[in-house]
Image 1 (tube, rainbow, N blue to C red):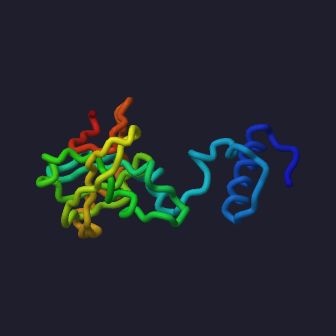
Image 2 (cartoon, helix red, strand yellow):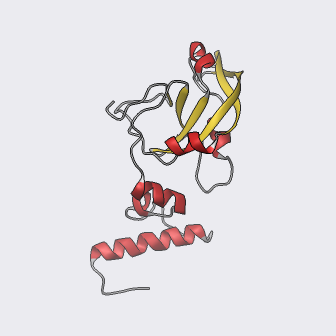
Length: 174
């Protein structure tokens, strides 16, 4: 397709062609994504704006919970919306539930949606050993424009070693 390129350019062209084949649903033999695919590969327009123009989230207000959805949401698969990926099986501290009015969906370091929580409900699940446990879910709606404008598309820093997808307090200095 191209020749006479530097090694770096060849890797970038290869990566772009792998992305292109994936987008048009043409199987290829590559086992791995191309060079820089995670950082510079296929993104939606919203993701590109977030990547290059996002301002850092300074803190979250009382009554808000920040929920990381990296494990429950897969972009471009059409299987789950941000709401579906955010709303259920959450390891929420039961004592916090009465105070939580809004949920911030965080995906890959950015707040991608803000929901107003209308009600909470228990979700009975089992841990990896089969022992019953209670998680929590919520029913809600997309928050109004004023609330969304304060949080949507802000970048979120994750403290090293943080595994819990739930954060009640957040400060960019954390």
